[in-house]
Image (tube, rainbow over all chains, first blue to last red; front, top):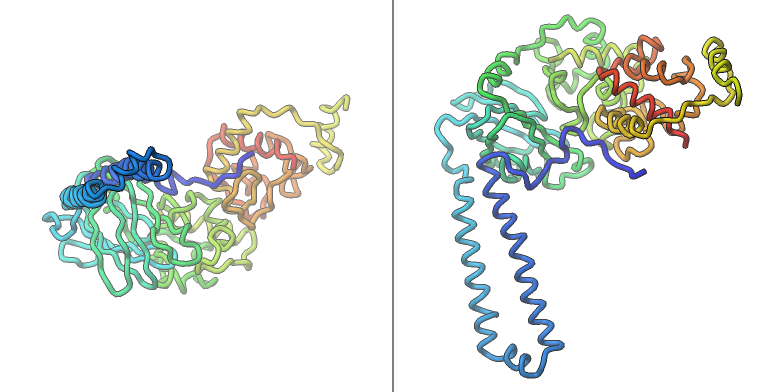
Length: 315
Length: 121
């Protein structure tokens, strides 16, 4: 039996399967470079074979001044210049220097080892805080303002756009767009220590009508909470996590106001259901070693059930 | 062992005999589907499971050799129908367990039970 890793809805993400206008040029460029590399390698190996094993006549021709000028100077100059010009033209449409009028704006901040997601209005004012999941409408560009809180991370949702570093003290801009509704997975693409490989991300693309419904559903928690909320507040969870509409206002960890409606837990890596929620709360260290949430060993089975039921209800 | 069914019924009633339990030969397709479902649902968040490299959770017991265990959660005889009911709705079957009810299809629960009962190492 082969060992394998749990795959939660296509995570880790597909890399050469573009699903929008900001990833198609990247994929085309990647294919051209992937195909061109072996062609040039074959030419070099052919020349090497002639130099080592070729007949004296071939060796003489390869060693001549003309061959040096053609293969050593003209060929690389033409190929590299052509690639540079073509690559810049191909990818000029990806530039976030010219942002289309009225584009949706979202600030995404890389943390060890998760993502803050701050939705903004047209004036750049924050309208909603969430984490590890980004909801966008299809068919329009979305401007991401990428920052980092601690070390360098890199934002990468391969099917929707290019890869962009998130650097402490800087704001980098990246455009993404989805052609069709769906779930698009992402992955931190710059080694950021510890469980970097388990720092995933989710983009959910909606039709415009679904997106409006989603926006309207982002209200503060209305639920009674009961024993689950009481446990959340008394066990220290609220020191790191916010649940809007409750006294929980911690800022160190992901906002949990809508954690029950997320596709994943642990930043893109686990499916979200009561079982994985219980496993994450009780011992996230076994799942994502060295992440900053400690294991919670103090709950009884019933308490863990109550806490899990409450968190799952936060839709 | 002749009369295995009769003994099984007795064990169901008694629920404490540690004698080896005869199991019906597992349907390999159901076992494979069950492993896929367990992987897809993320059972590994709490349980270390043979054949699944990550995650290997520690909240619940490791599930290697589960098919040879006499009891589910130390409370119920380890038979396919009870096991399928348990993986779907543990609180109803074993009150006090930390394992929550997990939404899944009946067919998924049956497949997961078949897979768990096939684990003999």
